[in-house]
Image 1 (spheres, rainbow, N blue to C red):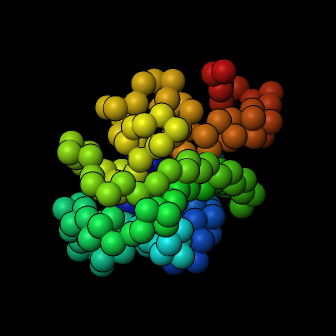
Image 2 (cartoon, rainbow, N blue to C red; image 1 turned 135 degrees about the vertical axis):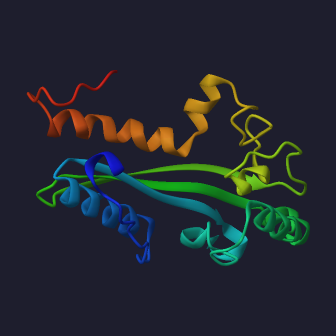
Length: 181
């Protein structure tokens, strides 16, 4: 952002991932006069009515650390009944053009909240320590997943895959953007 002279951050005041992702993308596109891509997402636990959801990073407050969130999730993981562990990571990625036009796509990966967290912690991703993919019997940790599993089970990768044809169409004939297959 500094390279295009933007020092401001966008406050995420939306009620949905889509609102936040579009808000950020539009702000940066207008400010920079360049196309901009932004995302918003989080973990949704069915038994908690979708919480932490849009508040995933600030669920325990703005000052909560990864360790605070992990400790809170330990308590939740212990208390969830076996038949109420369904959860999913969801992301909305938006592409905004400087004229205000915006496109949004969603990616979602389903899993369960494990009773015990993965031992190895991934800095910056506290919820992944508890997110288990029963289909492949692995935690949602980058180091644990093969490259093929990363593509099949990564919610951001799913969304970006949906965004690529939109980018190709929007910039068709333009020399500004080349999208690799």
